[in-house]
Every structure is written in C-alpha cells, then in structure tokens.
Length: 113
Length: 114
Image (cartoon, rainbow over all chains, first blue to last red; front, side, top):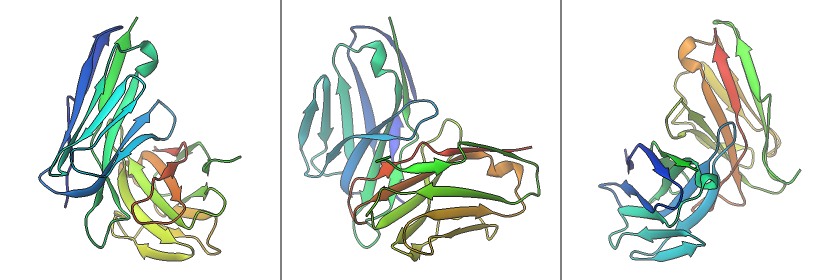
C-alpha cells in the first residue's frame, strides 16, 4: 500500500504570513496532485505535477515535486483568509493501477484576518 | 450543470437500513470513481468504473457495499444493512479517461447512521 504523509495536520496563521505544507512518501508516484476542499464541498484540483524537480506557480501558491517523485510541497506566500481550507495531496501509483488516487490525510489551514 | 452531481446531499438512516447514493458524472467522462471520506481524513478509494465495467472494487469495505453503472453514465452506490461505522462522506469523481487524468469531484453525500 502506498501511503502519503502530510504535515502539518493543522496550521493556524495570521493574514500575510507565509507557510509550507509537506507531502511525503517512501513510494514513487507517477504524478502528484494538490486539491483544496472547503466544508461541505468536494476537493477541487489546484495543480498536477508530473516531472521530478518540477515547480509550478499558481498566483501566490508554489508547488514542487521532489526529484525522486516521492514527495511534494505547497508554499503559500502572504496567506489570505480566502486560503482557508483543507489541502490534500494525492498521488497516482506507478504501474498498472495508475487510475487509483491515494490521498494524504490533509492539512487544515486557517488564516485569521 | 457541468460538474459532477451527487444526491442526496445528506442522508440519515437507522442502523440496519439499506441506502442508495447516486452519482451523475460529467457528460462524456469514461471513468467514474467512488471514495469514502471519514471526518478529518483524506478520501479513500472504494471502486472504479470504466464505462459500465467495474474494473476495481478492492476498496469496498465489505460485501454490504455494492456499486453499479449499468449504462456507463449514472452510478449508484448501495449499502445494505448499514452500520454506524458506515457514517462518512461518500464522494464521486469522474475523468475523461482513467489513467493519470485529473479527477473532478462532486460535493459528496454525507451519510449518518443512527
């Protein structure tokens, strides 16, 4: 079973601060996806990273895929209250079952005004 | 609508009752997935359909769980003789194909078993 460990599990910060969320595994993933989920809603895809070492930016969010494709990070610059939510990383297995997403437990981010 | 639609949004049932949860995927999406999300956890894979074929049901917790997609579009997840541990949010997702594609999620059905 491929597992994704996310840290921290909870994060409460003030508006304007920077933060980084980590997603780690001992297994190699063919790709990693980051989702954001708000209460009562389904996860919404933020980004997909595919190539080891890849960096993608989405406004104030920066996503990085580790060189060995086993880990990823999400960095938010100058966080805003609208960034509040559950951030989930999810990976596609390498090999035959690469239709099955494995999710981490998520990081619950609260940005206080 | 253009997104994945799930119904009902909330379902309360007594222990031992049967329930049926519906998923209407994005039109034309070949692949459909069901996930279970417990409170404070990430979603966990239950089952996968490609068109009407159920290719993987390895995540279904017990034989009380049954899923179907008879015409390759709408899917139903049925839980028989519900137990309290079945209480969770059940998410449906679809993608244009299956392998390695971004998945589009519905807003889920929150199931509470009393």
